[in-house]
Amino acid sequence: MTAPKALDTTYEPPGILGAAYRSATLGILLVVTLIAFEGMSVGVVMPVVSRQLQALDLYGISFSAFLIASLFANVVSGVWSDRRGYTIPFLVGVVLFAAGMGLAGAATGKVLFVVARGVQGLGAGFAIVALYVMIARVYPPAVRPKVFAAVSAAWVVPAMVGPAVAGFVADRWGWRWVFFGIIPLVVPALLMLVPALRRTPEGEESAPSEGPRSRPLAMTLAAASSAAGAGVLLYGVDRLHVSPVPGTVAVVAGLACLLYGLTRLLPPGALRFGRGLPTTIMMRGLFSAAFFGVNTFIPLALQSVKGFGPTAAGIALTTGALGWSTGSYIQSRRTAEPYRRMRLGAACVTAGILLTLPSALPGVTGWVAVPAWIAAGFGMGLGMTTVSVTALKQSPVNEQGANSAALAVTDMLGAGLAVGVGGALINLIGHSPERIAQGFVVISCLMAAVALATTLLAPRVR
Image (cartoon, rainbow, N blue to C red; front, side, top):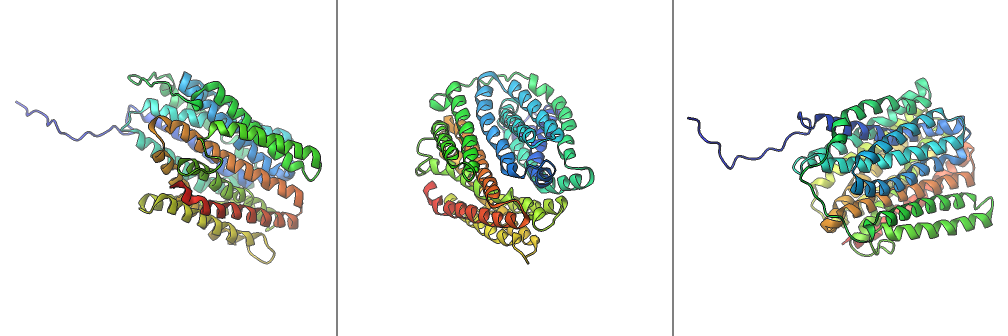
């Protein structure tokens, strides 16, 4: 006679690579890795693309098009997934992402390349949000933390190796293969996710959310207004020095559309930095603006001013990811109040930007950017992770989804506007190596001011 099993045996949740979840896990991680690799590597090859397509005047817009399109797709995909399930928005996202990569690799002119970047952004925005919903529906609650940890790792690895690999591919085979090379990898990802896409969740009945940020049509219109407003605003800023009157009209119209959309996408009080959650949400956008507003132009400065090749410029960018990872780890071990960690992170970003500034000056080696960008990346890892954790702690359970979407909106919008304004400054100052160096200095000073403002606003998250 065998002894009965103990009733208090510790429950061990199934592993994410066990037989039940292995295919879905590998497919999710591959899709995230592909999207992350594209995002991390395109900055390295953009100076080469700009020269070959004579598109230096659209350097900033090439990045902003991706980010603004992602902003719109994030919101629509979230609403769509809640109402109709994650399968269709995910498939739409993957198809658009692959199509955008093909268009970018085949682009023969700068307008087509910018359109391709927008298509990529739509695809990435649809797919990523649908993937998060897929995780919530496919995996039991006890397993989800493991999946999200793996997804975080899938972002970190491309951040560390993506720029250097993209630089090597561009040097060896040409920049087009940085885009073409990703497309074939989409097929195995889809095949691995077929069971998850067919799966119907059992036993999970969720009540429809309520409130202004849960209405599909209103959210879609707000997302469209925000994306269109950001695009028109950046167009107006870029045209101010050429056509002051039409440029001013475009800036005013863009701001109006942007504000209309944001008041409906963000929690009340966010635009005036109300204490607590509203400021926490806005901090995400400020961090992104300061960091990516400079990060995007480092390869341009190193390649155009210092004569770096894509591989060397990619190595310089990789160091930021190393600092970011370290900052994220230390954040998880610290016990200081969240606002203090955000303030320290913003201070590190400010210092990193100011220390990177000399890398474009005559007589100073471009490798100065390496230790400087480690410091900036450390600040981002410390600050951005703290913002995400704090926002969820400050959110009621029934608003965590909406506030997570708001974080994504400010993230994309902050980076998109900063990069777009930086591109407009490059166009205004000039495209010769000396002028690009001057433009990089001006951009760095402007983004350092944004990072400094972030340190001053940090106490308002309490």
